[in-house]
Picture 1: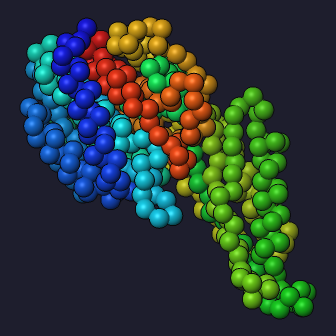
Picture 2 (picture 1 turned 45 degrees about the horizontal axis):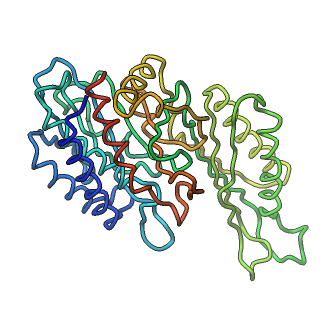
Picture 3 (picture 1 turned 180 degrees about the vertical axis):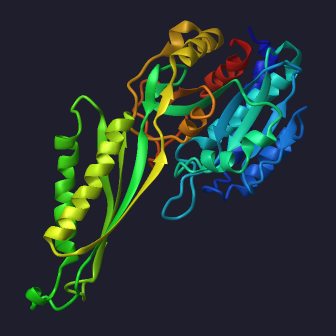
Length: 376
């Protein structure tokens, strides 16, 4: 299927690009050096660079003279940490992979059955980038609306050399909540003259556990998590307010709406029970990422052609979220998990300080992306 000499070049270049990008990590919507580097590399190839109206991120188009287009997407941002951004989720490898695929597909332009749209997307961390690109008029600026879109993400729990080709829900819908309980501050020796928002917050956190255990179908995977609870200070016995942030995740949208209803009602009733005021904000972050039946068959064909059917594996879905799902609301889509774990070794998960991508990752990822164009 592949010209092995050109593919070897593409893989070697992908590794070089990944190494460079690894050393210039930039957080969401701050990927200026990353974007400049990608733009410089794209300028070497016969692609049209499309102005998407954003400071970071890049889209380019390979016109192979065909009547239909397929899009390939990679994210480019690093993870913010307490010190500096770091590539602890492998987006440097994803961007490098897409640049490697560009090298191969441009070299084999005359053999393509489709034009190719390359999307280097900013700000996947925080699940804001895909929507931002689309909201900036993406579909009005590109030469042709894609027939399909493929995306990839490394998966350290999967051995390098294997690719997860999963049918149906793969990653979760996510909403974020922020709840503020407003009390009456005062001296701890006069509790009857105060309204303590810490007590209300504690009761809410305890009650929140029942949202999953008593309000969700036990056969539907659901997570409801408190990320932070802030209130008071050592020298303020009863503060004026407490603030709780968190999120809930599910695969099923009806379940998701039920979770939102229960979180809001629990906050309101807790505030009333403890005589507090209450402010509630729920923000829908991203839909569930679902690989369709139609795209599953195409993806299975591509992976089998690229690396052999024995390396196309399945896996349980994950309740993490990924804004590739936003593209899936616009275009038929498929998302691969490409194994990045070293076989026989327990590998650190996404966002762990010890996270790493196996050095042989590109040898699988680049052919799979190219086959998604050539074999479909």
